[in-house]
Every structure is written in structure tokens, then in C-alpha cells.
Length: 324
Image 1 (cartoon, rainbow, N blue to C red):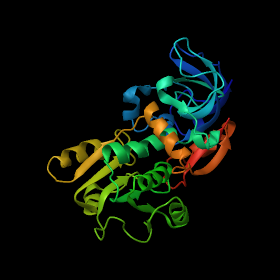
Image 2 (tube, one colour):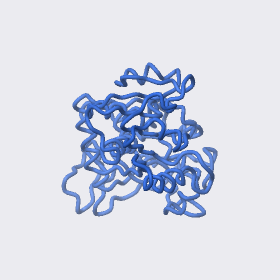
Image 3 (cartoon, rainbow, N blue to C red):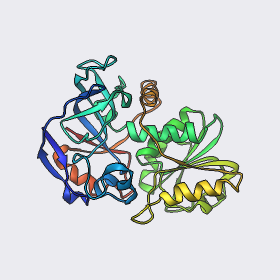
Image 4 (tube, rainbow, N blue to C red):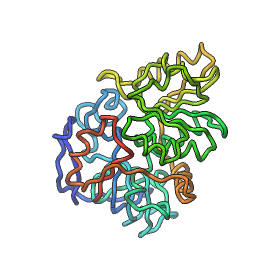
């Protein structure tokens, strides 16, 4: 089968479109004929091995353990493991796996769900990681409530476009932060207010919010706290920025957690996981017309290096999808 592979960490230049052996499903897995794969910052981190903390987390210290990139996918079940009962050959699924940038991939049944009936395979493929991140950040860590004022920083990005829609679905008043050229997009997905960060500081303290979801990772905790109510909640998504060793994780985990001990505001890091039960929740929101993936770019698998070269730039609109 064809796959996008690499044998060393590095930029997109280390990628190779190559023939590899087709995998076989383990007892608790399904073999997927992948039709589309989502691209997010997590793919860039695993491609480059940066920050180095990523390698320590089990993905390979010197070289990648899995040569095939990609995690988010949507496709059709080709075969099932001997212990799999709830999934059948021919089912359309979406979820996460190890190595989705390939014609076939194996996925655990606790990391997949039936595809939303009203979405295409391409739309479903970009939903798992970013959608679960937005959902868990707002619902589980942010404890969002109807009527709250919510600020989404990075509202036009992968996580941000899902977060705006989910926050509206939960009944919040939503303000999205983005660049000038994305204002129309952020309004179109339901934001009540939009702030152009190139023209004004969204966290200057002029307005305070019950909940801030920061998907950009570039602002200091001091500045972000200025825009929180006295007992508001800040949810920090990901670990962008920072140095090569820990990236932004020092800011996210250490500083935010320690500061929360001495201030009344809740400053919480988020490490999301694409769980089956949350994939089902996203499916239900999508089928109810409350959640529609925004795809900003698409390319075939053999050209994946082109989109991965700037996957960490942080100025994208919506998600990138690779068709297979």
C-alpha cells in the first residue's frame, strides 16, 4: 500500500511517499480503508520531534517508532479483529489511529465511532482530535454554562472553529479572536462578536469573560488573566511557542497549575484524548446541524508534504484534509 513515511525526525523534506506492507488488525482493532486524513499541529510535532518532550512521551527518542504519520481518519472497515463485535465490515467510521496517512490503517474500537450521517468522509476526517479538544476544553475543563461569556482565541483555526460552534450549542455568548481575513468565517460559524487581533488587543481588560479558551498559546498568563472575571476560567490548549525542549508546555502545565493555587481564577491546561464516547457526542452535534467542520485546504496523499510544511504556522482557516 502507499503511505507517507519518514525514518528520521525533521521538516517536511524528510517525508517519502512509499510502498509499505498493509497492516493486520489485532484482536481489538479494525482495519480501515482510509479515504481521508485530518492534519493538525500534532502531526507537525510528531514529524519534527519538537519539542523534545514529544520524544520522551514514547514516540521514539532518536528516530520515530512509527514511520507513518497521521492520526485522524475517516474510512470504511475492511476487516475486524476476532474480539470486535460492535463494528462490521463495510461500516463508515471516523476516529484516530497510528498512521492514518496511508491507504490502510488499524484503529482500536475505543477510538472510533460511526461517521456522522450528514458529513462527507473528508469532513469527518478532520473532526476527531480538534473536535474532541474543543469539546473537552469547553465542557470538561472549562465547565461551560449557558449564558456565560466565552472568548475563543484562535477562532478561525482547527480547534477554534469547532470551539465557536460548540460554545454556541452550549448556550454561551461567544467572542472569537482572529485575523482580519477570517472575520467573515468566524461570524459565519456563529460567533456573536469578533475581535481582529491585528487591530486591537482582545485581552486588554476592557471586557471580561467567564471562560477563555486559548488555542494560540502565544500570550502570557498575566495578560490572559486581565480578561477573566474574578472567578473565571482559562483553558490553555496545546503547548505552542516556547523552546525546543518543552515548547509551551512549561507555561501550560507548570506556571498555570502553580498560579491557580494562589489566585481565585481557574487556570487549567488541557491534554485531550479522542475517546469513543466523545466522538459519539460530536457525531450527535453534527447530525443535529450544530457542528460543521471547516476545511480550509485539501490535497492528495502524495502531496502531503506541501501542507505539512506550514502546518505549524498558526494562521490557517479551519482544517486541512488529505484525500487518499
